Length: 536
Image (tube, rainbow, N blue to C red; front, side):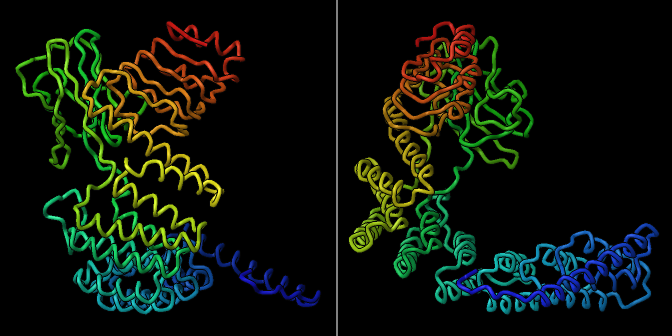
């Protein structure tokens, strides 16, 4: 491997290695047998320590032996027969030896944490120095980076010093995922955004980081570490908890409440305040829209609702840690109430940052002239265009993603799904800005291969998904469409219709153009029993 030629061994050498391996196996089995004998007799003594040391010294990834070793140390601690601090110090030395055998041993790093936490006195500063030493030997050992974050907290090392350490490591080698990641954890502490707490760092520091990451990315365009860090800077991360939609319909005796991420609304310690509907305040009465799920993005309630037109037109969710999330209801009348909050599709940057992003986009275009098939540059250019003006650059973004399907064919599905997500964002934003949250939403002709933001569609009476590339497994997320009475699925690639049967509230489904499904007479007949109108 790695360009090294394989040297063939002679028959005599192969025989010698086989005999040597058999001897090791014999010794291992004998030692393990003796260890389990002592375990059964609860003899956690020096002999047990020696036996576990012999085996762990050559293979530090046997978790059972580390557990037994900890029991021996605790037994010595209770007996008070030895200087217990020296016992812990010796074991720290032993784990260090094991880490020289395997620097990425989960068990050895975990045992070192346990040893420090249980020792009468722990030298945390020495541990920080040990991490520095290890990271000189292997600067990308993520086990050691994780351990470093653990020990610097106990050693009271300042974030400023750690940030300087990260910067030093990155400047020596831009291809250091762990250091970039650690940097992303330190920046919000050192440079918080006081003007917008939802943003991790201040605009001034963001500008500096964008310039740093561009230098790193263009030093080696094929290295992915800096590109990933840039995504974090641009805000392409997992959404945080927020209210998404609410619709209370007194005529249909039905209410829906959805969130940006799944939560346990009914028993997770959340509180609701819906001034226009007292009944809706009882979280225990809300049921997951996907039957059997404890955590869900969409929750429903059935029953008779009285809507107070004079009530405060808001819905407030209070989390177990007392954070408040508010959704403004667009309309409140005797017949019902409805509101949808536009999701965050990314950060909205100030003019100074946009200028930096435009300069970086120009640099990407220059690089693409020399390396037109650079996948990271193509993808980053698409991300930059989306951050600058996702609507204005929409067609160009799609062209970049289409090219990536060929340039990086192994990840074709990822680019198709990314294009689907960004296309839905544009249509969803138009629909939300129109303000008629019970009207049909048109998601047709977008060549969708996946469905995102479905919880934001929970209030719509009809959804048009025709002319896409959806298959059966894509429809599993539609179970939360509790108000959708008409669903257009014409011109997709459905085959079995199994997911359609689970759409409990839909009355009319259009399926023309799904040739494989239409030919399945048994499935069609079963679907006819599930919905009032099936158009084939």
